[in-house]
Image 1 (cartoon, rainbow, N blue to C red):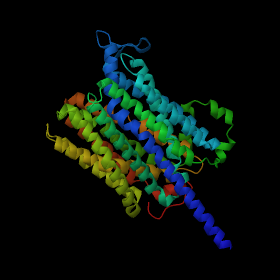
Image 2: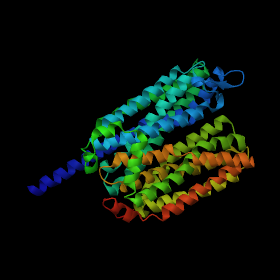
Image 3: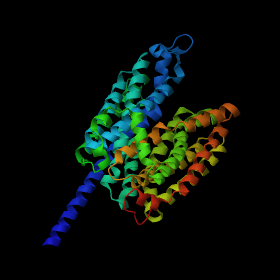
Image 4: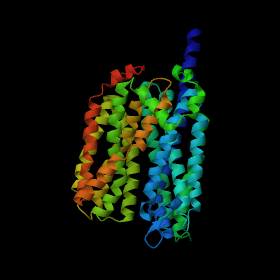
Length: 457
């Protein structure tokens, strides 16, 4: 009788965990459309054209009286959104860990971002300032929501399941991004057939991403559940002080706490460096394709779609490899693959779309897996009860600190006048990241963080 009860409880717990995991995957499905359709494909060129329409004779717009070149407005807006996110994430992360009420905070961040994205439908004429504000709000909200979403991973998946669960989440996101991008491209390329202007087609694509985000966010918000905080330190801290603390002060407190876990910090440093390389390749590949290789817009958008589709297969394949070889070895292998892909990119002939698609395929196959496994490996290194706080630092290294790669890319081009030299300079991030990650003893790091060590890691 007793054994039967125990088995029933275990089965119920397993079923509940699976239900929660499936709900968790759907947040990636909900929000990845924003990253793909809005940020990667449509908003940059469109917001720049709106800023151009509002510019003076010298090509400048004047937000709050500050002269800004119209072509730089999108980049500055993205940078400002990162600063806002950096201020807010540690504050929200600490509040989530202290109260154990992550779900209301995730819901608030998701719907602020989805609402701002949907409102981009009204971005027409010369309303560049509205576009900048909506981009800053949406991007910062997305960063905060992703930090909370990632921090659920150690709570909904036992150590032996995390690589697979994290990889499935990334795969769901890339599948969603691919699906919506196909729909958006049909509308954009055939806008005349639908009897609408190109501008209206873009605004519908932008708004549809926000509606998609908001609609599918309901699934994780129904299935994920809050857990009481288990952190004694969080309970001991006076709540008032934390609630009024500025983001940077909370970040400093998190980093001070991390110094008690130097191996966790060592992994985060390695991740910060190689992820900077990954983010720079993603953001600069289209410039390399258009400026150095002379490829057209349709080729570049097709390559983005190919990356999305293959990233699904890549994330799931690398998740399976991690079960056999461990997450650390699989990530190290992916960094070697990134290096080989960039080296191949250096030799691509101009005006040859086939070879650019081959490069996109190489990026797609390692992109999702290297990011998914990094997330699951980090989840093992987080002390129990500090998930949201530590993942705020992780998310900031993912989004807020990825400025060195674009700077190196820009400086290399400025000094050499060659985008080929600029793209090959990014190899340094993967080589240094490989060397730093290889030196992290992950088993000891997991044990030192107070977590059970999986059989394969």
